[in-house]
Amino acid sequence: MRAPDAMYCKTSTGSLTYGQAAGAIQSLADELRADVQGQVVALILPNSKAFLVAYFAILFAGGKPALINYGHPEATVAKLLRNLDAAIIISDKKQAASKTRVLSDGLLDDLSRTVDFDKLIDPTTPKDIAAIMFSGGTTGLPKQVPHTNAAIILTMERGEWGWNTGEGEIWLPVAPFTHIYGFLMGLTNPIINFGGTVIPERFQPDLIVDMLAAENVTIFGGGPPAIYQAVMASDKFADAKFPELRICPGGGAPFPLDVHKRWETATGLKIYEGYGMTEIAPISINTEAHGVKPGSAGKAVPDTLIEIVDLETGENVLSCGEAGEIRVSGPHMMTGYTENPEETAITLRNGFVYTGDIGTLSKEGFLTITDRKKNVIFVSGFNVFPREVEELLLSHPAISGACVVAQAHKRSGEVPIAFVTLRTDANKENILAFCAEHLIAYKLPADVIILSEMPLTAAGKIDRNALQSGLSRND
Image (tube, rainbow, N blue to C red; front, side, top):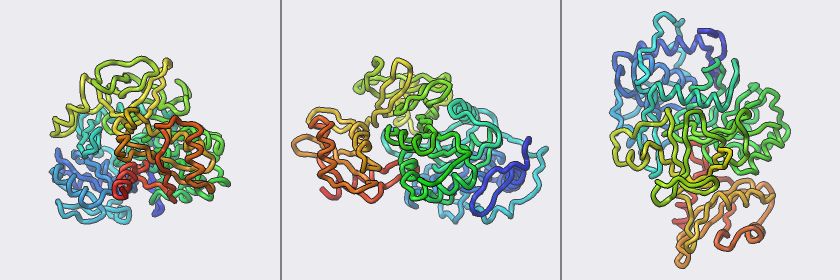
């Protein structure tokens, strides 16, 4: 190991060097090996030092880590575990479904030892499973996505191609490590150049602002636009300075132009937006070397083909600028969902992953995500893409966040309903009048609902489903 004394990870409870982490990984791997070799191990922990140690210990013990989001309710966790047949569960609390190895940051001292590098040998092959993740895919139903060691290495390389890093970077990830974006920002790519990872206990905007400054963070793994919007809404943000910050990746949802503009005005830094999904990531990234186009998801990463196809058949490749479903192929794409041929057949067709996203490709190769296929609102036979309406709403000086969803309507079939959060005073009538100045009639929100804050998913995206279900209950 080139840098055993370099800081590997840090939380509010303390830090681990690379050498200390390796010793803990070796201890836990030796303990687990007899039970987990060749078997699935469910990992249910929050972002933490314990998560990092446990993940790599499972690999060094010859197991297959299955990454379950710690934020899931118990019923969802139980459902995921039933389909895993895990040999053991590693969690910070006992799980009824199977044998549990209880682990937390507070228990890491029990694993402390001096690492024996001669015996710290990875027993896995490129074809062995490096991570089992869970994806809703295009249908929303949880599905297992196994990725091999070879695929994860290819994923890491493409992330590094987009967000080129140097030795000794300090990373601040926000997304859960169980999410493909958080996995890259907190688990895999920081170790390429012996970077350090500072892990917040939770996502709290004031805390993130403090950590960006105090921890000399150089790479902010912010994630979706809602995360950047929340940070900029912090009372501490206006006066904060981030002298070491230099790379601000974004992904997980399309970024409104307003977010790009406000972040760059405030920090002097661009958000380098990318695009990916559990099934294949990254797909495209904005880069200084290959071009930056705010509002787009960048250009295809190496050896990756992006095509836009018609919504009806998914067979006809559309011309530049035409909107259709995005399909993509590359060497790091999944090979299928575990024991789920029906869902695999929906997503994997003709050698491509069909993303379920709507987008366009420019002549220069920039990909722009216009919406989710399932989010298109059908108003009297017209297609309304929520993102177009959201972009307009976010250009209103009083609006800090926006989400547009469909509501059933007897005459029109569906109508758009806008949920907004405010940075200054405004009312529904003012916002509707603003929309009427800029949108054709069928795209106008039928109602504007003002919220104190947007509901977020565990991955930090606006929880569109929660807003939609709230509408249904209030019909």
